[in-house]
Image (cartoon, rainbow, N blue to C red; front, side, top):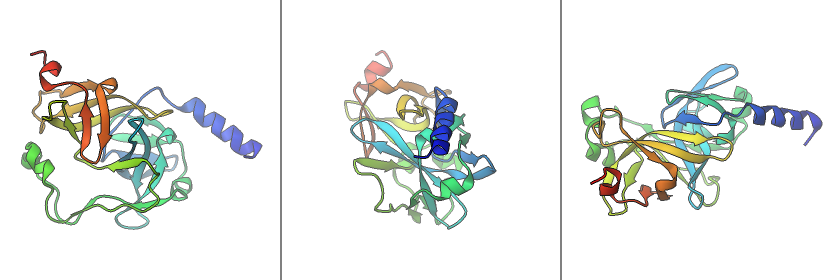
Length: 210
């Protein structure tokens, strides 16, 4: 690494926030303005940490770039800022990301968890073979399961430590009605993450104190 690159990396590390909030669908911007959106999250299955974001862009329909999560400098769930230029994002590996061939579910349908578990015909998701080994790509909806194999709900928002990708909290909703604000679940309560979603170490009754 050249001295200039080393200085750039040092500067970027200093700008990393303690926490960013994001979700699949968050709008993504670079130094030059809006680039696309978060199409999926890449999770290290052993560490239960987010390693990369699959960021969609307009250079080819239905494709995105595998962007390290440490490049995120700000995020509130709706907007996500990357400490990158557009050209730097487009230098990352290309992946195919989820996209709708038909209209997405209506707001009424989104209130029903089962509609999330059975996406409409025309919903397509494929992965390029360069997805890092030992990781899984999660697209919306990400289902949350309790220890007693009950579906708690779906992930609405993720709070991450971008330097490590460690999950600090997730905001869970059952449809949109788990409660008005959703249920905040601490990262340490996550047992493991796989293609089926997030699996917690606790039973449903423990989460609700009954």
